Length: 336
Image (cartoon, rainbow, N blue to C red; front, side, top):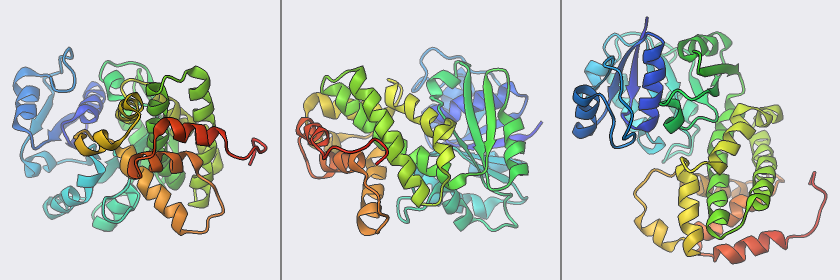
């Protein structure tokens, strides 16, 4: 049995805490919301996220980062990407033993635009942590917490550490594969959120299954082009961290990115959403990061879906007219 310190008390933290608790490990979640801490420790639930889920007594939480980290062999990151670096700097000052850091946050660092594994290595030295592992794949917390069959990838540059984390999480309802394509998997995990925003927009505009199928297919092609020029492996995008993650995020009502797009599509404008949204929606910022990266560098690729979402989000373009513009692009072979 190992102790796992989970950074976060949100939906993903809770879902993965249940997986680890089911596997016999000691769990402690670190949070900053007293009501969530009390829910978990006293009422054994996390009502803010799961109104009908009763959690096991072995799943506990604390406002104390020091207490959460004490004797932990693993640190699991589930907080929004904009808070990761500052939180890890606090963790660094409290570490007493070498640990394995597992990242389950999807997106880029707010200030540097680094991938999360790069951010983790930027904070910690090799003497403080084992090789970084990311847990990536088609996995909504709302289903994981209900023990619905799920498959994801343990992604690391180090095969042995990836296999260690694979064994840590795997059970009869949560199957974990391994992968060594850190770059491809992490860019896929980020890029698919932008496509999911687009998927919500087309649903909000009233388009149907044909449209979504076309979007997902061309979105997969687009994200694979970007991932490869950034150093990822093309094969990765035909696996769980590519097409698998893309399908679930573009198709599920549980997806915050899909819901954001849906709201924008239904109103046929993004200005109200951008002004008032308070929920974590990684695809909104990721869209800008990717758009700016491709615009400023000579990669020799086109990213029409990201560009279209960017115009809607940041230039107040009309969503319906933007979809029409995508359909009116120059005709070409599917492989181009």
